[in-house]
Image (cartoon, protein in one colour):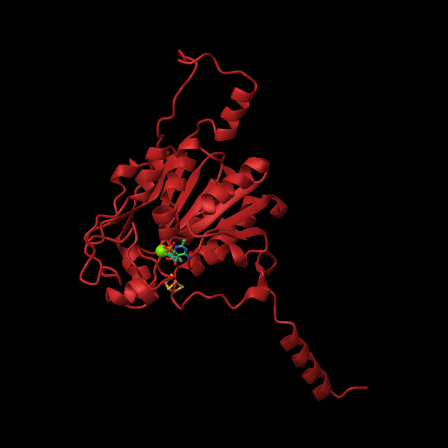
Length: 308
Ligand SMILES: Cc1ncc(C[n+]2csc(CCOP(=O)(O)OP(=O)(O)O)c2C)c(N)n1
Ligand code: SF4
Ligand SMILES: [Mg+2]
């Protein structure tokens, strides 16, 4: 018979050998840990919200695929224990479009950075939104190219310093939410990485809704953007975004401005319905569309606002 000391030692060893599982472990490729994200980076918070949203959505895990491009955010797909694809820079949306068209019953998510989705991949974004491909696109907007050392991006605020704009950015950035809405996205929302509950709810809504959904998250990149602009740690940067944020659900996305001096507009801006690419494909395939030019039976898309 073992002495109490021997039993305690054995139990300790067992506990060490089998660390307590995290409730999300089954969604993770734990063999890929530790992840590459820097301390204080906002991507981890967004990733956590995405894991919770996947659980909350009730969607069968075998039916969800996630696609990323290249960048720090682009590492998300590779850490998820789903059908996940880490594709080439800027090409996550065309890859995801192919998946959706080949297997329409599946849910296809895209998670990538502001540079990947709106610089090299910008053309794919606008056409996927116009076609209303049934995808959920999650953009971690950290205002720069984090992975490659902090170059200017289409999101970098006017005057901000980056490695390629050392004395200040001379360009005006895009308002991605307005762009998405103008191109025909049927769900558009923006949060900061500290709006965890709102963000999680938006992700659930977006992934369970039919049509092109866009969810943007303003997130700190302390290592490249924050340091160069003397904005402090990741926590300081997250607080800087959160303190300036104002929730304006249902506002016209053109007015959902990111003014870092005054206020950063967040909220759900668009929640509307129109036929998806596959709906229209079926109509045309079955020869159920009238002869062009149509009369009253055809309704072109108009950007719909979210309900408060
Ligand atoms: C064709 C091609 N061009 C350039 C690169 C280099 N590159 C890798 S990631 C990246 C930008 C990443 O920025 P973003 O999408 O904002 O992601 P973040 O790292 O900020 O999350 C670039 C330019 C590449 N991998 N492939
Ligand atoms: S470089 Fe920036 S975006 Fe990339 S992991 Fe570090 S803090 Fe995050
Ligand atoms: Mg970025």
